[in-house]
Image (tube, rainbow, N blue to C red):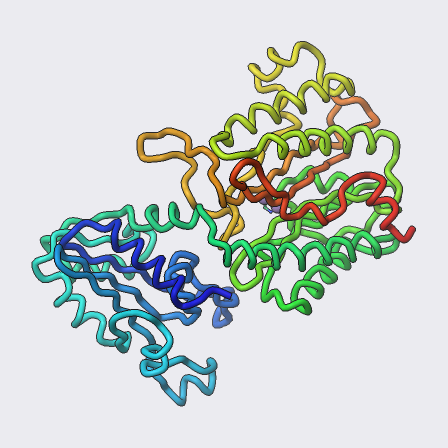
Length: 426
Ligand code: GLY
Ligand code: MN
Ligand code: MN
């Protein structure tokens, strides 16, 4: 639970970063059409949510800043009995005034008129890139002779990089629901089921535990399907002796979790599966042990590439000197992605990885990132030893950077061969 005072603190912090004589405008998310007149479930814009905790559409947050004062104004939809009958209750203006610690609340329909007032004699307007949002185009028509600053999102995203204790609590809760879900899947997976059965179970477990949604489209990929990194069909029967890669994490109160486990369909790893799995697990554990403030993500990436490449040479998957192989990007044939990403209100939290000078942002206390090494060997890869063909394995955990190290927030989700085999019912 995040208190209204925390949202206010975030807004105050943002105002401090704006230039004098400016206004800033942040819009809620729009509804997205799925097909004809049906829509995807509405999901509030993460930056807007971060600053307000408000989940209604058609809302706009405006900041005004001059040398001597600053003001925060929220525009919301007014109450409307007819529309609320169809689309659900709205907070309305008077309730919004009571709830939000903003200076003023108005009906959204008065925005146009008021913006004209707000921009009067202002030098700058902060907003999203025009090409990302046609509402901004209209806004800028009302604000002639004013310089546009496009770094508003960047400022908010940078703030989002460091998590507060209440945000960490919500992420832990999301991970806990995801933990119970992965464990249930491990217990109940067996021959005769389909990827879709597991997907349905994942969705059931998330929703029944109070997570409104998944944080991203789940991947349930059996056998060679795991070698499609963004496999979304999730509709093949589970086959004897194959592995299933399950990348699934719920979103709880707007906060993501992002977990991958790879488990055997019939509860026992084969010898080749054990060898490849152990390489990835050992790599993942070593990389997590390297995480602490000041370390850079690119250093973790390099270390991962070295460990996986050396391991692949040991297993006969690559041949040659590890340094030369990495220099020639040969490892990317089997390890084509990054070691991890920021996570928070978005699964791939949109905070930058570099500062404005192009220097990499080092890890710092209370950042959260995923660590997710994997190897993917296609069933038709003639270069790889036969025993490893068709295996796709990834292991992914969510890591909190602490004062002098890190905490693996998903350490409770089993991942050793022994633990997985003993949890399985087969
Ligand atoms: N589930 C998306 C990712 O692992 O980045
Ligand atoms: Mn991830
Ligand atoms: Mn993932």
